[in-house]
Length: 424
Image (tube, rainbow, N blue to C red; front, side, top):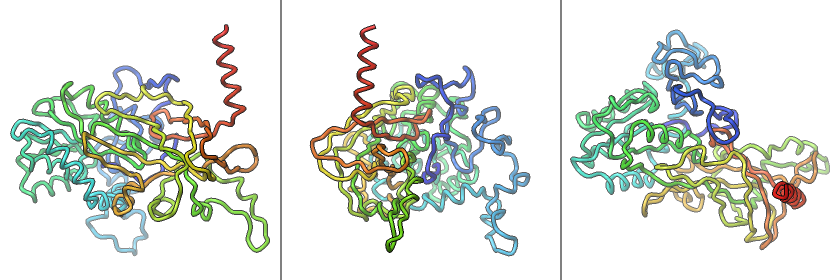
């Protein structure tokens, strides 16, 4: 499963698009060309390297790493520093990803139970074929095999991770039931499967719901590999945002003075545009006090059986009614995935006793600027019962979002402009 931790940027978007949410990839191009996220350790398919990927991505798939030593884990260390043989020629990105979140992910017991319960509900023993994309360690595929799926195909883009998955599967005596394919799901064809699967299962969510291009990978599989009746697990998810007052953030995101010395000019560089993961800040939201100043706002509502990227506009207004008074220091972003009664969430209220989940996903934050001073960020003070307007801008691949406060005078100007257009 791909890396969850690196804070995404708008540059991670696949293509600029044509302004209406449709990708600009030429007709007949490889589907990977229009997907922004590549799993760590995986390589772009031949002829499918997007321009934004950079020159190092242009090597052919499965090319020996001997000719690309700079990507190997041991290359980052001086020669006199010992690196275990098992790690030396493994891609650095993969080692970092596994140590960053894979162990926490596999130890997230409620996550594992969520997927087990979904598979148990939908697998018909001896009849259901199961396809997993982004298989990682092979855990979900082994769950399906133990639930007596007819067949299981696990697709994993990293050759090293695919080999480890095969070893896990063999150790558990499931090698006759689970087939591991080392490829990206965008390289998979119907010929690689015994038949169209009854179930598609994946866990390719990021700290932001679509941070690992989950929608694009699933939509591609939906279009090329699945039946209309194939059950996608999980099927539903919502990316939420809520403005919060959090004094603890002030200690690490602002400065005013020390001992009578004015330091406030540094605030000119406060980043109120980027979304930053709590793990990057170095704390868990469930470990610091904060107050939610409104009901959660659904930014993206996804049905993985039907939703396409083009269903979401790149920019749209949102209206927030404050339920409590306070200073809105930041947007708190988290998501909830559901299927029937089963639920998996990164809401800090639900991860308080799940350290592993906060260490693999956690939440995201975006600092809020009221915007009245062009030179310095200005706090936004919210009053209970009052309504506030924001604009939500999405990157071209709909992976990253950025929220911007719209003052009342700007809202009125937009409304007047819309009225004039209607009169013409």
